[in-house]
Amino acid sequence: MKLLNTIILTYTILLILSTPNFLSLKAQENGTGMATMPVQSSEGGFCKSMVETNGYECEDHNVTTKDGYILNVVRIPMGRCRDCRTRGNKSPVLLQHGLFVDGRSWLLLPPKQSLAFNLADNGYDVWLVNSRGTEYSEGHTSLNFDDPAYWNWSLDELVAYDLPATFQYVYDQTGQKSHFVGHSLGTLMVMAAMSRDQLVNMLESVALLSPVAYMGHTTSLLSRVIADNFIAETLDSLGFYKFDMRNVIIIEILKVICRVPSVDCTTLLFTPYTGQNCCMKPSIMDIFLDHEPQPAAMKIVIHMCQLIRGGNTTMFDYNDSGTNIKHYGQPTPPAYNMIGIPKDLPIFLSHGGADALSDVDDVKLLLDSLQGHDPDKIVVQFIEGFAHADYVMSGNAKEHVYDPFIAFLSRLH
Image (cartoon, rainbow, N blue to C red):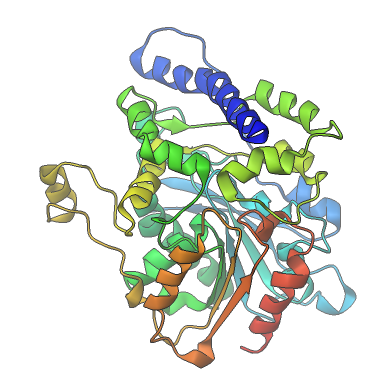
């Protein structure tokens, strides 16, 4: 109980201290003249700071979506080992991060433990996506980053615009279909796209790490509190259109707290949201806080809350039949039907027994929808002790997840 109270108090302080971020945006919209925090311009991606410093070649690419968002995509075209430095000897692999993080989440672990670097060292052409609104993908062809219209997007726009644009760009650059690896929201994006018969002609295989297809059984304390109390909807009604937890003061305070030997920040900061991760080293917290969390549209947070409360997977619900008819031609939002995932597509699926966001019962619903899948084309892995963040931040993820996944890929060639 003492730990729970500490966690709740910590998150309460974080929300209070984050309020200026929300208010600054609202002030700009309403013209109140309140002081705002400057937006840092990010030229290029993180090639120099996180890839080239580890001895890998790196390229920055910009992908423009049909609705005008300019996405930064970082390419690691080859590994650093002597026998894996031939460009194009294997297919491209596209890595899609989850909510509130960016492409750097695949690089938080040391090179020998990172999925991105391990794929490159095994000869794959690696592409790390940075979703709209994150630090390196703030651009737009006509909208300003602080314009409310810039943040008018949910899961549906990521599915309809971001993924197709990225896949098409990689295909145009390489002339090959892509393997796809998604974590958390990244898995939902690709499954939603496939359920609507998108991307199939450019997909070689799919890896679903901590898959989020259904969320009705989530035990994530923080997600439940936000969803059940309509917190995101309330903030949206007050004019707060961006959900941004990254405050310079908060980050520096957390770094100090996390360096105290008696404080386990992997539990303090992640457990209420992701579940009890088994194998994250405390030292990774400094690296994480240097780069994450990232902002997201309030609309996508509302969308996730709808999925939690409803237990099904649909497009964004405007909670007004007339508005829904305007957008969808029907009074309720259409469903993303997971049964529509191609039955012959190679799938590697891994989920954890301690994952609060990708709950075991919700994954069972997904597996039920995949029952007709070609048994020779699907690998399902269950790791009892793993929780949500273990898949990108635990030192033993390589042994338990990445190595089996790379072996899965090698069998496809």
